[in-house]
Length: 183
Image 1 (cartoon, one colour):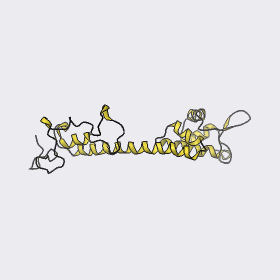
Image 2 (cartoon, one colour):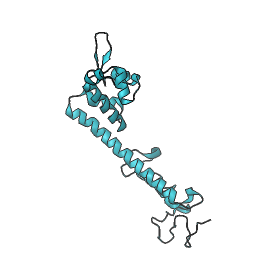
Image 3 (cartoon, helix red, strand yellow):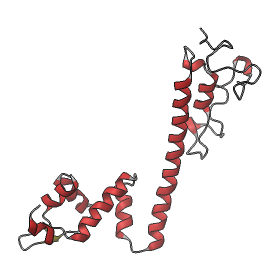
């Protein structure tokens, strides 16, 4: 960076390079109202310290999953209550995504520990797949209950799978009582 750039406003190329962005991204953000750079006598954009902070804030908010429109709303309003409403909506969305991710990790952990030749026959895996998120995000596949696939995850003739390992009739995650995989 040139010493004059460190002391004064930055040109679009210098600001973009500082954050590793293409210049068209800054132009797009300007068109959306996220940035309002000053212009020099020739009409070229000049970005000051507040603009540098805004670019950093936009990037951080994008990392958190906010849309550019939500970021624009956050940065554009002086209304604290409106800003809090936008943030509360996003916080709730993040919590729901975190719960879906938690459920996905539990399903993957279950599958990784399974020794069944056919994963779809493992009662523990089937239960992990069927378990709804703790905070429902919506009704899965149009189901109207909080138990998304009750009929799919029962033994033939409607008998439910044992709830825990070690229950009478339970499964040892694909292992027989001798510790060898079933097969």
